[in-house]
Image (cartoon, rainbow, N blue to C red; front, side, top):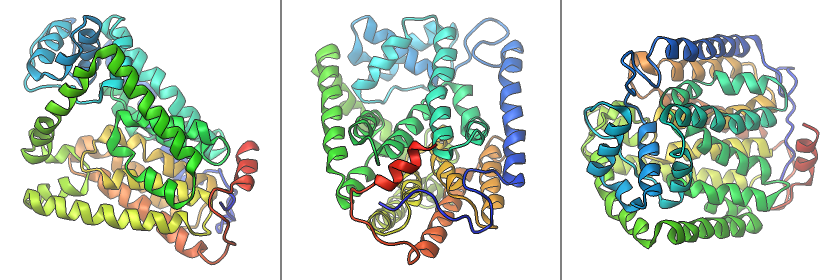
Length: 411
């Protein structure tokens, strides 16, 4: 692989933050840090003014964990049973469902959290899962600005607000990419753990094969198989039967019927449905985009472009290829942005990245698929940089990353 560092055409040193990007991050950072203490005091976060739990995504994690602890793991996927536990812990009913649809290994996390009171589990999960995400973005950027970028990234607000798992997803994707050049077994372990959300791992095997990273591939496969086997031993084979039984129903509700509104999803498929296209057209265009992304990634990862661009491209591609992407998942987009910041800037890139942050932050007000637009902007920046650098650097054989390892070690 080619080395990480790029010569910043704008004259900015790699990892530094131009004023436009720094200022946008500063505003978002302050708003995020101020919001949650005030929201808790004003009873708009975790609990309401009557001391009842606010219905939000984390309740399905706690409820699934409670069912697993009580020896009823297979009922975690049953919408009706799951809702009964959720209503009991919140102390109030709510419209619709917060369904559990994760593979059985994620029950280990849910069961651990369900040992604690609901509020402690909620806040503990939200902030504890944020720490490796922040540390990873800081490590990729290579400077303290990475901490600001991670916390200011709008998906941080979304994950803290509803107790979702975007931090974990971003940490595993980012960890795989950060560790891959020098700690291949650890990179594979991160990738294997990502099977808790398999739609974000489908591109990795293709890229690993194309770039000859067999040690990472094998490590990931062993990890995935090990946690699957562990879940069978602890929660029973029936837990996997229940998972596969309920998955088509969840897919039908979310992707076919749009039970949660197409405007909440941030994918090509959802955009087609938002604009009035039918389901078939949505799947066709989603498949076309996924195929284009896959081909582009193979070309990039087999090319001579710097590793920073390869990593950024793969992280961005994971978001573009999944039809099932919510705003909290966009913590993943902080990973390619961090790689771009590390690499330095062309003159047009800081305003473009500032626009990305502004678009993501505007979702609560606009309620349209701004996440897809933000992802496409980041993808365009990566492609533009890759094309410009295509002929500037010597090619290197797949699997070789000594110069990159040296660069990372100096961070």
